[in-house]
Length: 434
Ligand SMILES: *Cc1c(COP(=O)(O)O)cnc(C)c1O
Image 1 (cartoon, rainbow, N blue to C red):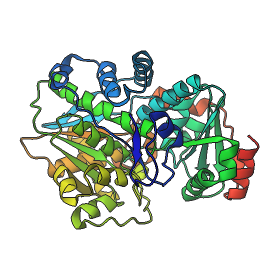
Image 2: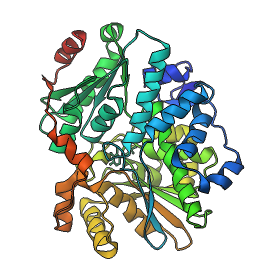
Image 3: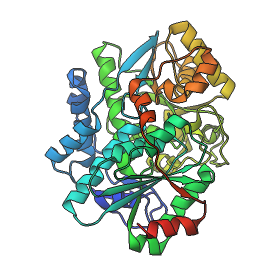
Image 4: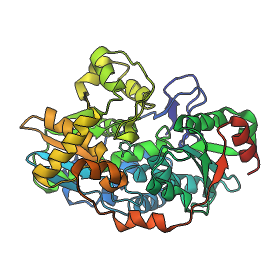
């Protein structure tokens, strides 16, 4: 199957090219030319199926034309070597815990899948090393670095703003070595992002080395995120819950996560409606109200992985609904919360139910508390483990929390970085020397 650009000004490409290029040459985002429906029987039998089997059926529907089934099965199996449990918090409200992977955030799923898919393409096309550039304000860098660690034929360069990520986040991508290089930029996250963008646009650099991006503009990172929505449905079925009024609340920043679920729904996943839950960076919420998309500079909040002022996957949502504001509104509602509201939700949910949300999950959970009807079943996505935001969460609940061993283990490694000043000239010189 081919993939077209949402800008429609550059040709459709193969799966391989869409993954290796990341962004289309016309600056559009790639979308699958066909969205196949999965037969109804699959949904009737899902309750009995493990995560990896469900994910394989979905992956085969998405990528089966282009990857042989043995390879795809292995990629899915290696990607999902951890569970994604659905837990009841109270009444008709559940959370889907997406933080049981190696870096304790949902981005592990997409990053691990993409790494293995790139590794596969490299095996069949030897000799061309792929270089992944990723700018991070914390979470993306760790998921991508850990996902790609040791994948043959792929090198990863993580650019991050010196002194502006938490020590635990920094340890997750600066202590790995091997094919992972951390670039410590004496600037801001925006500087890192513009260096990466600059590199993709630089002809000389692109002639020198094959460059790609591993954020959610890349279809190989973005589409596999739908696996766990299907698995959440299966878990509700196994619990014997009614299945015709499911509402999913997604804490959203760049909107990759929710967009993958919208495509999942087109493939037949019976979710009634979605809530796109925002912090104060509420560009999408405002769009739902006014029909106007007005990107802004981002505002710093306690749910910092959602501090996005120009959500890159918005173009995909428009494309999916033929630019119809009415259609978009009929399937997705919005919510927006201040830091104070997020903190209160986290603290009150903890004292009322004993369940400890992280600040991002709290945004989604709050939207269920405010917007779920009694006859609906609500699922809030818990996108990261609360211990990743230890100081913030401890301040809110006034208690110490335990850091999982897996997370603490990262801090025992030895930090190694390349220091970089935030200019294109320095970055280019560095890359040309590689
Ligand atoms: C990246 C991230 C989000 C936002 O996801 P998008 O796909 O960008 O909308 C939410 N929560 C956490 C913890 C994240 O790391």
